[in-house]
Each structure stands twice: as structure tokens, then as C-alpha cells.
Image (cartoon, rainbow, N blue to C red; front, side):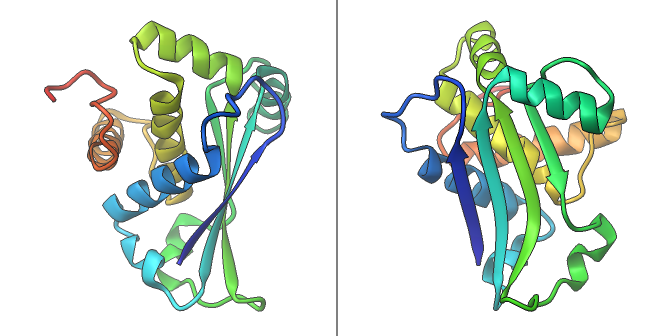
Length: 169
């Protein structure tokens, strides 16, 4: 069973939006489209943490872990090596920590405005994108990018979100 722990710690994330429900739905939609969909029906909890923060914190994390001294829209911190995902089993406390996804408020808002979409839909996209990274996918080459974009588009469609890459609706 997938469990998503969502925390709003900084930034002006709209308190009227149910961010925990949004994050859970986006992560679940991504998991369902992945080769690891079976994890949602495992006999143990598969946990993901989503942290909604601001550009300042994401800039610090990006500099510390990726040596890029600038904010970015989303960071993913996998806790399980991709080659071990198929062999996951119940941890000592009944759960497996898949990893963390961190979103930056200001960058998310700027990108949403540039794309002509709402912040909530863009956040759904970024959480799904981050979830695919936790599941071992990457977009470092054209083939990987096309595969990941297709999965993101399919996951978001299940949530009623338009293709974030501009393909036909």
C-alpha cells in the first residue's frame, strides 16, 4: 500500500488546497503507470514523503546534493536503488521508505504561469515526475525522456490533467 506523507513547510502554498490529497493522488497515479505498480498492493506500506517548500530551501538542497547553486522545480531523493525495487519486502517496521520529493513554491508558480496552467495541476505533474525518479526512471537521454514523458502524461490523464508537454488532449 502506498502511503504519502505531505508536509507544507515554507512558501505560499495555498492553504485552501488539500495538498496531502493532491500529493497522494499524483504519486498513486504515477505508481499505477509504472512497472512497479504492484507495490501499491504489497503486504506492507511503501512510503513517500512530499515536502512543499520554497526556492531558498530547494536551492540549498540542490547545491548540497547536485552541486547546482540555484533553485529547481522538484528534487527527488530515492531511498531504494532502482535495481532493488523488484525485490522489496517488508521492512523491520512494516514499511519501505521509497524516498522524498521536494517542490519549490516560487519556481512552481513561475512555471505554471508560463505554461498557462494552475499551480495545483503543475504540482501534480512535478510530484508524478518526482515519483518516476523514485521508481528509477531518468530523462538523461532522448529515449528516457520520451518514455518518462509518456508515463507522466498517462498518469496525469487519470487525474484529469492535460498533457503537460503539449500533445493532443
